Length: 374
Ligand SMILES: Cc1ncc(COP(=O)(O)O)c(C=O)c1O
Image 1: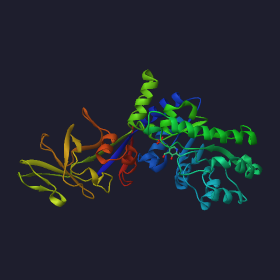
Image 2: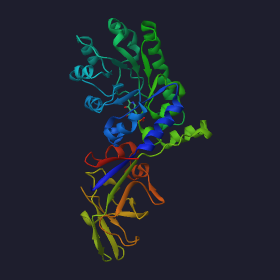
Image 3: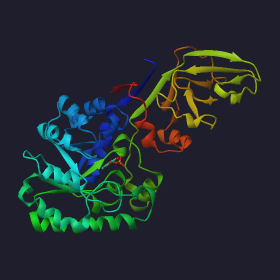
Image 4: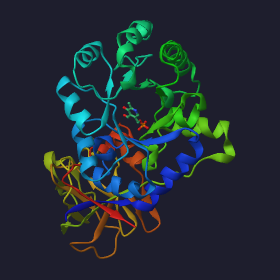
């Protein structure tokens, strides 16, 4: 295997248990969309299954179907946009779908066989959701089918980007108005859910029946500001989130080059002295962003930072191993994770890449093997 991601069962389970303890009595609904944030849907499920999560969230119907094939019997919610053609297959496998637009609501209303739904309200993200000001009209529309209403939901826009949650509070108050209207119509027969990782960690009032937790389950703080905000509120209770994923590859070849030798496409790097360089079989196809070329990024070999030289190629990259003792083909290289006393966090790779850790891990190509390690 040219490159693989080791997924720590212990870390994933510990993160789940830690968050479950913090958020109770609200439940934790792990978000396994985007190939379990790049960790591998199957291995992430295998790690979580013994803990019997009551609800799993996915984006696509095919992810829900895969979880059923893997033997998951509890609830599945598809939180992403659904289309008419998804409704019947979802109903058949008992997956609940999110209705986040009036067109889909009308289509669902016209179906003879209805499955369970969550009505999502757009309280300020302007992405997906029905209009809060029309909540009463929607409640009337579905009144004959209210037994199919599993929940109402929303999504916050900027909790992880600020330390003052004034916008989130506005969103929440709009959601509470919707909740009120639905409660008048249907009592407490439906659930409410609004919070992803950051709001679950920072806003107890946003947790409701369950928290849709993605990034924190995989051992990341949603942002530095989220961690800072948490520290300022509860300095002694900072949860220990452990990164779950280690991305490794191995040295493909080693060569010596003379001072003045250009390295890689475009000759964008020139050796400043005699150097020992190595090729790793990972490039932008596998998910190493080309943007980090010539930006001070490195990988770990023998626990030492080894600079990436020149441009990242499609399936290869070139690294400087001059400071290592003898390096051979097949030696371990770490792109994300720990090696000896050193560590490269996905957040660091994200910083080099001008993006967020969410994008780094979800973009590790599916062809890279995911292996559960105990
Ligand atoms: C609707 C919804 N809920 C929850 C989440 C989980 O977010 P996070 O990874 O920040 O916990 C996502 C992630 O994209 C989402 O789209």
